[in-house]
Length: 234
Image (cartoon, rainbow, N blue to C red):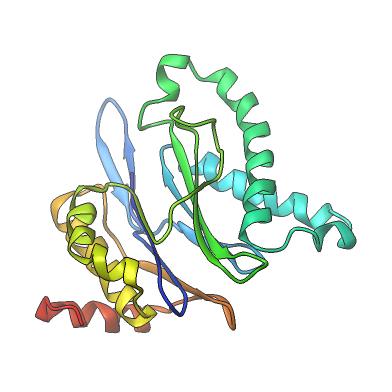
C-alpha cells in the first residue's frame, strides 16, 4: 500500500508520496523502501501510483510512454494539458486492464491487493491546475478521470484526512506552495508513524505554469522535514 498526496495552491501544485512497498507471502511479510512512485508522465503532467500490483501499474505507465513515442508529432501536439493527457492515458490503461482483469478472479479484483490507482496532476491548456484520479475500483467506470481539486489523499488516508481537515478552509482559500510542501510532508510523516505500510524516503514534486514539473531533491525534502520538528505550520 502507500499514500499519495496532491495539493493545489495559488502558485502551483505539490505532490508527495512515500517509498515503501510491502511484499507478503504465506510464510512472511517484508518490505523495501526504494520504490519509485512519483514521476513525470508527459509534458509536465506528474503521476503517482498507489495500490496493489505495483509492477503492473508501473508497466502501464511505461506502456503509455512507449505509445506516445510512436505517435506522429502532429498528433502528439494535440495531447497538451492535464485534461487531454488524462483522457488519453485513461483509454490506454482501460484497454490493457480489460485483458489483465481476465486473469484475475472477479472476487479479487476489488481487493486492496489488486486495485490500482493513478493520481495525475498538471495544468490544463487554459492554465488551470487540476488533480485527477483514475482507479480500477468499480465505484466509477474503471479508470474514468475524476477531478479532485483542491486536494486529494489516497492510499492510507485516515491520518491524512484528519490533518487536512484542519487546513481545509485555508486550502479552499488558496495557499502558496511553500506551505503546501510542509502540509504534504506532515501528512506522509504522521501516516508513517501510525501505519507501517507507509515509510521510506519521501518523494515530492512541484508543478507550475512557468517551470512545469520539477522533482525536489533529497536535500530540499530533508529541509522541509526538519521544519516539522516544531509541529507548527505557517
